[in-house]
Amino acid sequence: MNFWQKPVETFHELLQRKAPHLRQIRRFQSLALDREVDFDVYLPPDYHLSMRRYYPLLVLNDGQDLLRMGFNAILERLYLKKQIPSILSVGVHASGERMREYGSTRQPDYKGRGDKAGQYRDFIIAELLPYLHGHFRLSGVREDMAIAGFSLGGLSALDIAWAHPQIFGAVGVFSGSLWWRWSPVHTANPDADRIMHDIVRKTAQPDENQRFWFQCGTLDEEDDRNGNGVIDSIDDTLDLIAELKKTGVWDENIRYLEIEGGRHEPSTWGEAMPDFLRWTFVRELGQ
Image (tube, rainbow, N blue to C red; front, side, top):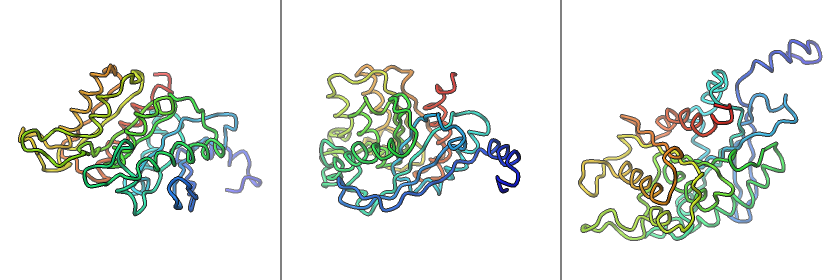
């Protein structure tokens, strides 16, 4: 419909639309990573109709998988049902260096993976966020800022958020690679040397108001290194939650979602996504 021919009808149609507007940013030059980065920006449907409005931000690692999980349609359904406020979402595509750039910034794992995690963190904090704030209307309030990721990208998101609670008020971890460790599995103590657990355990003054959302699928994997009848991904996640609580993080600031039959794949993460978005951003609706 042409706005100039039928301005009233066109404006009404725009108001009724609930689908996000996708803007693709390609070949963004990152000095921190010394490479070009691709990312997708999902603008809320009312973004161009509310020029004085500033929006919450969600940054997602492994943004290339959002298409496979139908992220655009998920947002549209939630907007239509008024279950989440308008948010600006950014999916950062991983590169061939994914196994080096995702991980924990304190140290690589025992195989040397994650050795560029610090550089990826610098890209997020010092390059991506300033770019987004300079080009889009973001509230900038830390309660409006969230980061999330899938598998190893979930570990990366948690590591970055935990180190920067003044920036990110919430984090989402979908099937997180929380097994990440600095030594091979010890038969005598198979749950020892998990890096993220140790980082949380040794944090002197955590932010008790930061919010943490975790998801696992009962079919994420089959490994059960300690032989307790629970797969490692669930064990590692529940153990990490226990560590968070020991530091003083309140129960109401932690949510754990376990999907029966859920697998380590985008379709399961897409199934879990509405729960994450509602739990993370529903406070913006005044509920």
